[in-house]
Image (cartoon, rainbow, N blue to C red; front, side):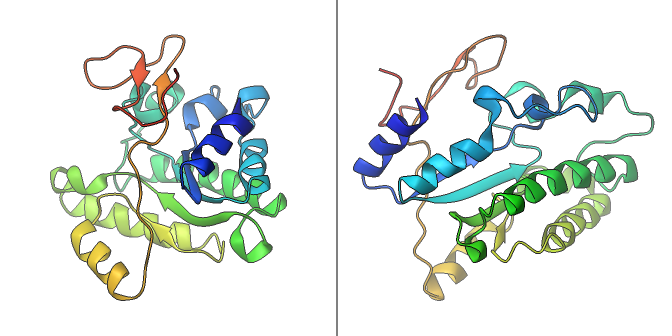
Length: 214
């Protein structure tokens, strides 16, 4: 299915594919990882590269996506002393471990742009600007930690944060010659199994995407 969808996206004029990494799917049990079959994101990224397209990799690991628990694995909720998406040592340690694992896998596969790979942008966290004020100073400390943790991964490409100081950042990006324009969404369809979809929708996530499952 992947090569066909990627070809359709390319034929539609896209030159980059954006994708999330879902923590809950890849680490359903703590320290037990699954990257098999449909969860083989490395194979997916290589399919994108073979089609001559670039990749925007949204590691999160909180992804929202109207997805169950925002993409967090449920075991994370039960760790003693944890507070999610804030300046909390337990949460930050788990987030760093998972982020580092994904980055390491991409490095080992040679997928970052400086390695000749397709990944030109990576994203840490997601839409935190919408909720940061509720966390107070702990929110500021956390988001700064996220930025420093991401930069410490040494991937050689820019990191972005969706909806974090976004208007000014976008204006500055275009002022400096940036040309990226993101479509939301280009492809969408049914989320099978017991997974969430869009708001008030149980299984579908497409937001009237031009390329749907039909």
